[in-house]
Length: 324
Image (tube, rainbow, N blue to C red; front, side, top):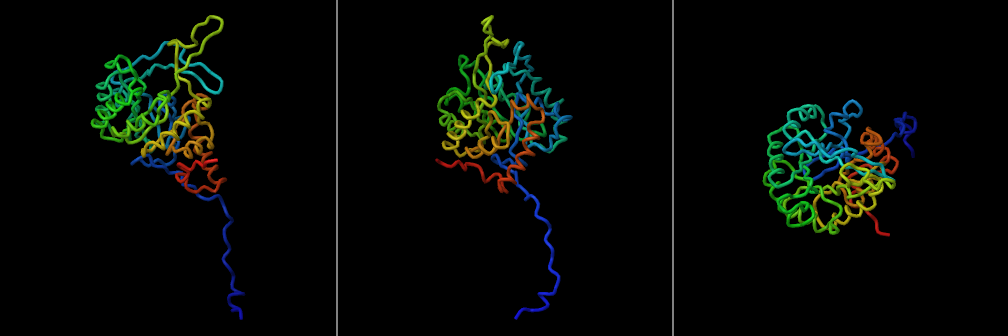
């Protein structure tokens, strides 16, 4: 027999179901990011320039413009040319130098909770180490990202990232000098990304960024001259996404290191694809030239994408690539 008290007692009314909370947190080694959207080096200035347009605290992280030991003027103009589904750029690594960055830009960046990663480059090993030593004494940087696509003047101009032994040498030296996690930004054109990824891992890298831009050339058919002041440049944008995503997947099967993927990310779905291919987080670059708010927009869009897909913990998508 039913208990009449249970039948007649008022029952609690449930609140209308709303969108489920989504956990966008991701880890890259020991670093915890509030979401996987990181502004890529060279496309977001030093971060502070975007503060009036973008809520920097909404981003997972910011990789600042590449830093050298001394200021650099960069390449001659023109520096950027549109291409189908992307662009070619030749900025020439223009920057104010690491000491000016620490004195002028970093104090402003410390106002925000977003993690700051310093991109580091040089023409010889000592150049890299000098930048790292200056940054070691500065507060507000969470990690270093080595740009190994620079020519090594001590090795006849060969890029640091073009040979496993040269790559291992610069990574091991930088790792010994660094007091923070060390990411290595690999070149996409080596043809054996797994070998280079393993060389970086064995030398002490804490994470990999895959990948840099692809060497490219744009010509004016009438003058037969380059569209860029420095003749060649780097191709980026949606056109390179499928190629780079394959590199991310190949590297993820060769090493245990976390991978940050970048190349052609414009939509929340692009982020999910990279993570399924093996990336722990992503960097957004060329999209900022179309929409300076692209990174913040992607954070909002990713949250909605996860709600629509019933994905409550984004990090669980990493490496979820399904075979046909």
